[in-house]
Amino acid sequence: MKSPFPSRTKKADQAGNGAAPDENGAVVEEPKPSRKEKLSGHKDLAVHHGGEAGKDVAGWVDSRTNATGIFTAMMSRHVPKGTNWFYTLGSATMFIFAMQAITGVILSMYYTPSATQAYASITHLTNDVFLGEFVRGLHKWGASLMIILIFLHMARTFFFGAYKYPRELNWVIGVVLLILTMVMGLTGYLLPFDQRSFWATIVANNITASGPVVGPYLADFLRAGPDFSATTLSRFYALHMLVVPGLIGGLIGAHLFLVVKLGTTAPPWVRAARPKGAQRSEAVVAGVAVADSDEVSVSSNGVVANGSVEAVAEEADQAKSKTEAPEAAAGPEVTEAESAPEEPEAPEEPEAPADDEETTS
Amino acid sequence: MNNREKEEYLREYEQLKKKGKPFFPYAIMKDSVMFLVVAAVLITMSLVLGAEMGPKADPTTTTYTPRPEWYFFFLFELLRVLKPPALVPIATVGIPTICMVLLLALPFYDRGAERIPWKRPIATITGILIIIAMAKLTLLGASAGSPSEIELATKPQYEQGKAIVAESGCLACHAIGENGAHGGLGPDLTEIGSKIPRSAIKQSVEIGPGIMPSFRGLGEEDLNAVADYLASLN
Image (cartoon, rainbow over the protein chains, first blue to last red):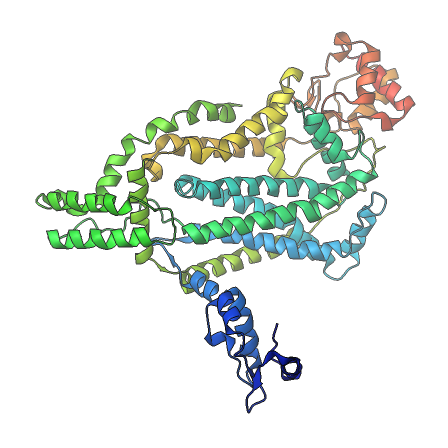
């Protein structure tokens, strides 16, 4: 691999790679453009100019990762019309998770995960270390805030119907993230090793053990044996420090990937088309519809593969025939909204009896 | 949602997106303001509420309060509601598991195309009811303290056992007379002496059946005193 720095490029030159230094002492890499082009597709980035090392490094990274392109695409992607403050809850949850990670790392620098020393190390951190209690407070209350924000974020997703097509998978990932966050709360609660946390964990473990089939085994695994012992604390520590945060981090990545790929939803009552004056003539309707068909079929989602063009063309035909009647001026979006409520009721019904158990218990 | 509705949704969404604003700076701006608000709340909470430490964990202790973090109160309250021993596994594992499966699978059984909350009343009302139920259970769990006083009169020879029971946190889950957790995690102990023999009482306290923790740490003498006192309740 070639380096943009002169000292090493000279070696490379001697080694007979054929790169020729220009008058500035930098190397114009001509012999292997094909490889760089294969990696990046940007021929211009493969050329280095002397005196711009920063740019060179950025270019070197960029030609291999397309980082700038991805970043620009992420930043300039549009959020739909009507996006409001409710849509900040997800990123706020992620922000709190980042805070928890940072304060957690600081706490781990002072914490001793042993049954005999855990309490003393936390006491030392709280009472003696500069800002120790403050950081511990951030971590402790950050956990509560994270739970609150996750529930608010989930409530927004639920009531806005944002878990529906095409975002079903992201809902599933989100619920797993909620469960993992609660596991974090449970495992972290034991770590200070005071009376409250100790006995709450004992009861939590007994609850786990009361579960059918796997319950006793799971409880034994968590306790690291049939009884609560010194190993239990280190086990909870490992889960809290390594396993669960790793899973959460990975799943947040997947969650975000899908958010960027599919886009955030608009509030469900926001419509793209204005109810009146949207269409004045056949020509406009047809024009809009055709333009839309292009949009959908080339959309980055990749969800609409086949049949969209035909369907939209059909839509355009319908719209054409409707333009005689002034009511139809609202366009296909509004007619969809009015006709929809009849159908979805039926599939929702199995939800009601099942959820009754939850609410009445 | 059939294919036509899916396509309509995507087409509508594509238009909404076109009419929307770029993520940077508009959404970033809102997110950043939200970050600042969250950070301010968090810092205030940490400064005002601090991070108290209880006494050190002591497995041989006689006084403790098994209280979880507030966001698990609703689960603990669920246990209080369903107290018969046969129902305990349903409350501890059954209902939470069913709820989680229902939550995970939500997009797969609610497949309607409608998204506006007031046009899908079943989902919206169910969601609101669940929120109310969870809030109520959490409040109940928050208000359920663990008293350490037993007003029920007893004979002088059982006073020692009564004192140990009172300070051992039994009343966090059990009721004795007017005190303790009525409808709590554990059975009412007011007349326990007439229901099961002293030996069984002692064994229960020692082993901690089901979700009850073991009180073996009390030591033989205190265990006997507790068993004597509880056996005298009838």
